[in-house]
Length: 79
Image 1 (cartoon, rainbow, N blue to C red):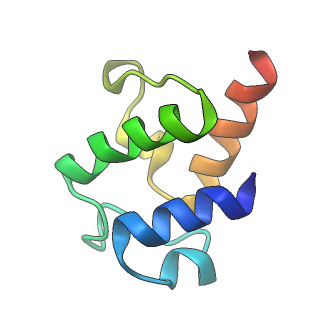
Image 2: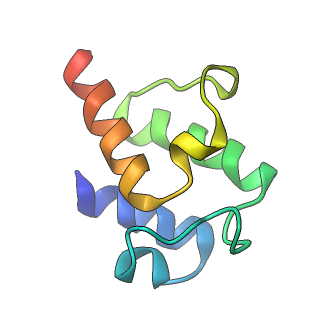
């Protein structure tokens, strides 16, 4: 699952840094903007069946690849 998330992030950010540094700040570095964040949520739902509403989280809860992987793993386990 982790590799699939990283692959999705590489495609979305168009940068391999998300694979190399799991703690890179996606928003602060400009790798993802508001539109990209929405696309990320749609991709997570499509690929993993995990629904995350933009209103239920703060961006800080999903601002690194590591946090995104952990959130998807947690939500998948709850399903």
